[in-house]
Image (tube, rainbow, N blue to C red; front, side, top):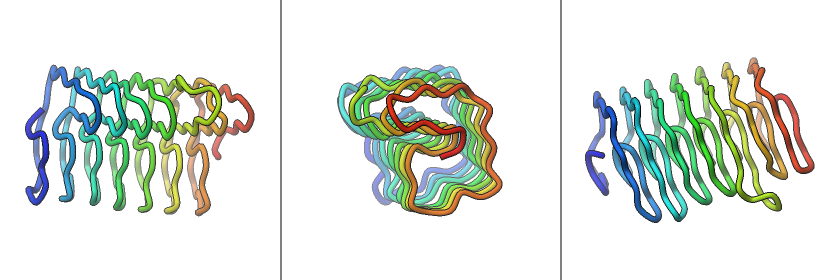
Length: 193
């Protein structure tokens, strides 16, 4: 990666290729944790693995927004594991992933959890849970409290209590989204949410 902790430092216009990042919690292909917006990041041919929580293709956790980012990677973690980041606090715009993602709970093709809006974002590959009891998994996001607009996922979703082609569980609006991946769920499974 580039920085273990990027608190207070902007991360823009970066390319990370053939990175292998591993650790316990807060593991990412570019940074483990950041409070700043992440913009125009391209991660390719990368492997990210964490034995703990908050693991992602770019960051373990982004306490801000993410835009114009792409990830092609194999990612494995525990809770809060995502293609871009395990958790993103702000909005996500125009991001894409092509991932093989494995995690326990809160696992998603873009992010495991977000309070912000996700728009114009896509995911493909696979999202697989190792927790067959409590897992929430989604092609775009596992759990969202912000709206999801104009998103597309062809990711295969394997397992989980709540599994959705777009989102595993949400209390917000899902608008103009499309999913075509195979979905298998332990209890609640749906093509979109």
